[in-house]
Amino acid sequence: MAPAQRRPVTTVETTFALLERLKREGPLGPTALADDLGMAKSTVHRHLQTLERAGVVVSTDEGYRLGLRLFDFGVAARNEHALYAVAKPKVDELARETGEKVWCITEEAGRGIHLYGATGEGSVRTDARDGTRTYLHQHAAGKAILAHLPHGRVDEICDRHGLPARTEHTITDREELFADLDRVRDRGYALNREESVPKLHAVGVPITDEAGHAIGAISVSGPSSRLAGDRLTDELPQLLLGAANEVEINLSFS
Image 1 (spheres, helix red, strand yellow):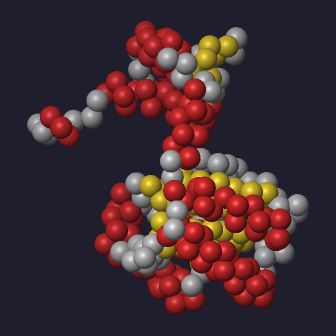
Image 2 (cartoon, rainbow, N blue to C red):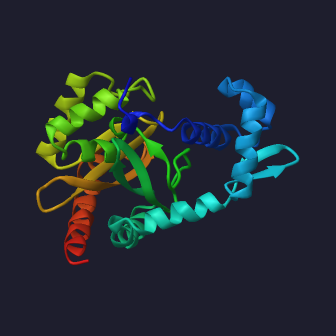
Image 3 (cartoon, helix red, strand yellow):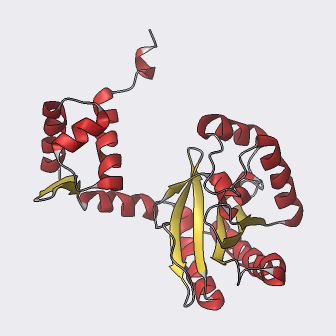
């Protein structure tokens, strides 16, 4: 038997399974949730009633949905992250200047977290939003982060989360990923050519601490027709590298 401190609290696991399902598919009723999760309807119903009393879920005519109390937790968590306050003005400025979608992403527990995004005048829509958790290897900003983490840490992330494909262009081989990360370190920026969304390109640069380890990254993404040639490999990387440098300096004095 596993040591007591390593055994998961099953009620907490159940709670998060319910919340994840409601996030993806909600609103849903107890029967649908019980069927989806392979649990007794009475058990699911008790969990939902407890969560409703706490304001975490809300009961509607269509079923249960996520409650806005979770929004309060998310905002508080983001505001406590030092990178958010420093990077936000620069992300807004880059979106205005490029006309594209600009993201600041950080890493937590081996996954990428979309900390803050700004929309330029000509940017296209994707399913990414503030708070989205993603696989680092699928994105330019994520690869910029991976390239500036210790080799052993990247191995741990690959072991824990794998290298799932998002599109046919996503890197799913570890050796190929490490070769790409070498190129990212050499040139200072990462590229995403339809690796997360078809017909979408992106360029990302790391934001590093004094030891040179990534604490986040900034990226610009847009249609492959616009983010191509020198704009993708010269103009935008230079713009992002300058922005990241400013953020790093401001972070050191914040």
